[in-house]
Amino acid sequence: MAENDWLDKDGICHFTGEAAKMPSGVWIAGGFTDLLELVVGIVWNKPGPGFAVMDWDVGQPIPKEVADRVLGLKMDTETINYIQAENDGRGILLAEAGGDAQENGITPAQWQEKYHSNGVATIARMRFFKFVKGGGVHF
Image 1: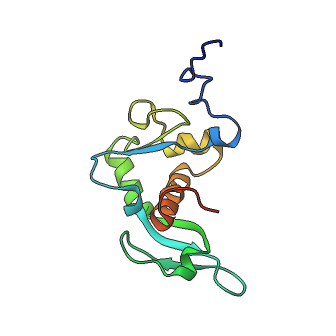
Image 2: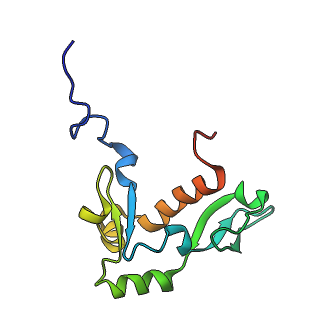
């Protein structure tokens, strides 16, 4: 049996396709702010036409009818802009697939330019999903 180096850049830690365009981590300067603390609202597909935004603060309970129909999150852009301004534009850094956010992270603006998506909102949704549903596989 040939030996494989499963941890090399093309091994199990190599991301391809759409997974390569998703952030794998986030670093926030100061270390005292969690990404979910920057969420101020839950955008959800309410019954009937249209959507609604439910104001939310981390730790508040989320009604099941909202949790089951989340479309996205409303981020606290004022606080995000403050963190960025106080840290020379590098207060929030996103890790590219398989990368390290603090050492090699890119700014939300760089992420937007490179991947044409909101990396902060993307990783916030991933963390929010885990917060609401818990770990493990969900269908």
